[in-house]
Image (cartoon, rainbow, N blue to C red):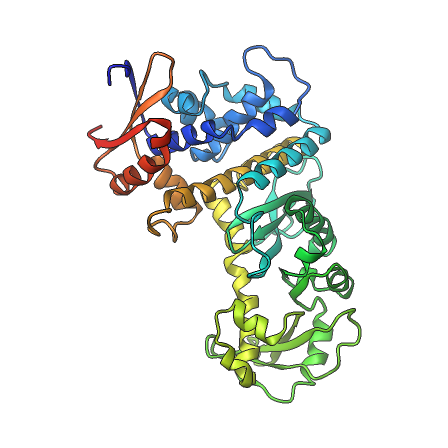
Length: 456
């Protein structure tokens, strides 16, 4: 108490506590070592400015312009993250604009190092359970004059221009394995292989690990070439057939249709026509539903998973092996669950981290923002794990609630003569303050930082 000589209020005291933890483990170190932006240092180094942008994302900034209001005006939050001051937003923008393709590659290498050090996905036990990688694309609208902005598919935005974000998510852990940025017309048919190869590099997926990894993708990755490519690399593929005409034809070979107990009007059945065009054995399940005109619409799922495996990953008892309807339903259900993996990840990042709100004209600048956003996503996921070690209270919290509620409990930070945080006083009236005080105390007590409740 005698060493605490200065105190500062911050609307994000809980985020400041996370900043102290990140400082202690030198979280941003690989980026400082590997990323070298050719820009003169006047007051702040280029990497310092990237760090400011990253902190602002965690603070809820949906645009770099918000650095001034969310970070620059909050010296306590800056100090908790190890910053003595914060760059002005326009200076951060200039640093992003100075980034090159080489800097993007350097950033990807740095993020791989950070990921291998801190992620649960990288330490996954492939012997005890399958790894599940979900792959998908999402439109990133931007101005028509931006680099590589082309017409493409953007949901509910006809004739819009933009870029496409490809993402690989480890759905068991909610972690982003890799993000890659493409031009606006690129779809999963062209992006699937580069995305999976990038994920292999990040996770060090050798042949043995690939055989215990399920690659789950939508119809965009269900072409014959892509499926055979994944099968030849050893993956357990679970996807939807790319060809609608082929699906309609294959559905005619189904001998018995079963009603889906979860979705009224939907039926599924086993495709009996032999799958001779694939390099490994696969199971095909036809799924059909009525269109508005009353006619059947059919799609076909393609899976390299055996019946026992699909029952295991969906939590069904192995006794269901004798019930064909339940086995086929497990295949269909497992495909449906991708909506809670990569699709949910993209939606949550758009709402919680402003993924689609930040747009730069230069392609490398936009790419760096995407990679910083990937890092911010994983940090929030890891923080949720750190804070939930003694309880599962936050297990259901998505990205928006984590950033808006968990990381924005107000309070005071007390600093010693050297500017190090000594005490964190959380606003006792905040709904999550009592829970967070216990969790943060466990995290920060090894650093000799006390956390308690008080009036602010």
